[in-house]
Each structure stands twice: as C-alpha cells, then as structure tokens.
Length: 282
Image (cartoon, rainbow, N blue to C red):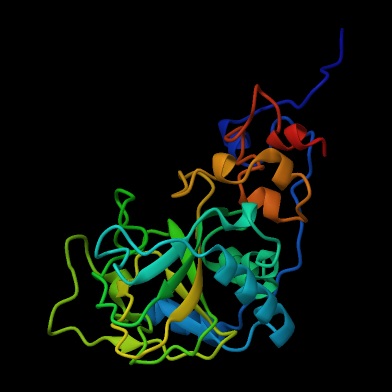
C-alpha cells in the first residue's frame, strides 16, 4: 500500500489549526508583550498611550520620509480640507518599517488581536492650521457585527509633532469600544485628548470612538496611522496592489506576512493553491 505523501486530516478541527500546504514556516519576529496593567487599561478604556517607543534617529528618519510623500489636502471634511494625507507608505519608504513592525506593537497585537494580523491601512495624516474637528468614528465601523467588543482591528497612531489640545490631537471616548451597536458619542459622554510627545504611540481598539481634533495653531500636526485587522478580514488598503511583489521581496519578517503573504489556516490567502510567499522566491 502506498504511503500518503502529505498530511492526514482526521478531524474537521484540523483544518483550522495548521497550514495544510506545510511548505512555509510562519515568519517570526521579536515581540514584547505588554504588561498586565497596560492590558487592563486597554481593556477598560479601549486605548493606551505607550511612551517613547522609538529613539530620536529612527523618529527623525521616519518623519523626513513622511513629509516627503505627503499629498494634497482632503477631498471632504472627514479627510480634512486642511489636512494632508499619504497612502501605500510601505511602497514608498523603508523608514517606517521599524514602526509598523515595532516589537511592542507586535506584542500588543498578539495579546489583543491576533498573532498573525494583517496591515489594513498605513497612512500619514498631517493636520494643518485651521482644520476643524473630525467626525467621530470607529476604525472597525465598516465591518458588520463589530459590537460589542468584537476584535476585528487594532490601530496605532504615532506622534511626530507634540499632540496638544490646540493643534488637533486625537480625542476619544473611554470605554466606547464596549458600547452597543448604534450608540454614538453625545454631549453626555466625556471625551479625553491624547496628549503625546514625538515618539509616543496611541494604541486603541478598532471599536474605540475617536476623532482628530481642531487645529487652532499656526503649525501642522504630523502622525503616522497603522491599522491592523484579523487575518480573515479584508484590509482597507488593497496591499497586494499598493505594495507590489518586487517591493515586498526585500522586506524583513514579519512585514511580508503583515502585507498578506501568509496563510490563515487552512488555506486562506493561497495563490494557485500555493503559499503566497512562493511569488517572492522565498
């Protein structure tokens, strides 16, 4: 009798615990798990601010890259008529790699979203002088059945300018990630402002209601926003088109995985029945 050449699936549950192709190991990267107190604050409020995650050299290199790719101001009041944005950033610069795959952010993702998430969006937001307050929203709002406390996404806002009440710092509603479907912030709901220094990161639940603030100063406020989602969800940016394979081929782990070059067991994400990393020659 001929011995089987591949894996034997004995139970239906086996389909969801391993890559059936078995031809590529999952990419590994350094992660730093958040401490229990930080996780408790995140679970209660829907957000935490992590202080001083990057050194001056990394931050300045990233800031120079962001300022060099900023686009025109927004097309509507949600984007901001006085706010510049830039998308598909991992196709344009390597200076942001240490932030998108920062060990402490990866550790937070593993603890509260998924061990192998996808990068859903990666954009620069530069709120200019005279910008008005943004419409409150939750980043997971476009996914159905997001509440209560569905863990579809996790977002990070990196500060490159000081975040103040006067220059458009992000404001949010503590505990709003636990609100039922249909509830939106009202006058009775107290908001907080994310006061941050350059190099700090605001980490928040995808269901957390938040908004960019009004900028009444004469200077802009620059940030990088990286949004992540569970590996079975569609990303906001079509990363396979935004960051072409020839650009992904040179990236260090876990960036290819974050961009979709991964298999969510048993075979979600395959290309012609094969692991997508075969396209990269790795």
